Length: 85
Image (cartoon, rainbow, N blue to C red; front, side, top):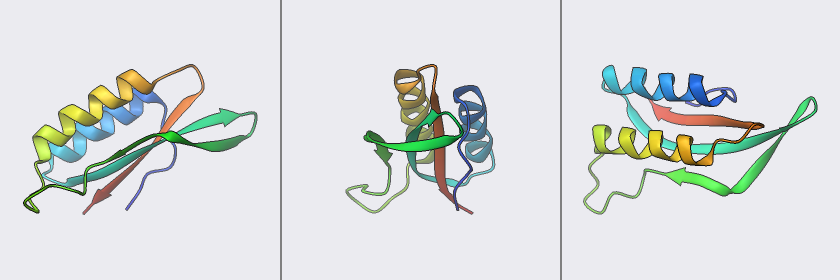
């Protein structure tokens, strides 16, 4: 599943919410608002699917996701969060 593009504050809140419910965070894509459209930013993608032993480290990924969102946030940044129900 994935969210619609969320502003940074909502993206951070969503990450915390899904982690509190034990959902697996799979990745985050940053998109940039350009007028009424969004443009994918291929330089700002976080992929949490490649754990070396196949385990999903939910809390560690949540910390990394929050750091990614905070670091990659600009005035026109939105984030699409990919997760598993």
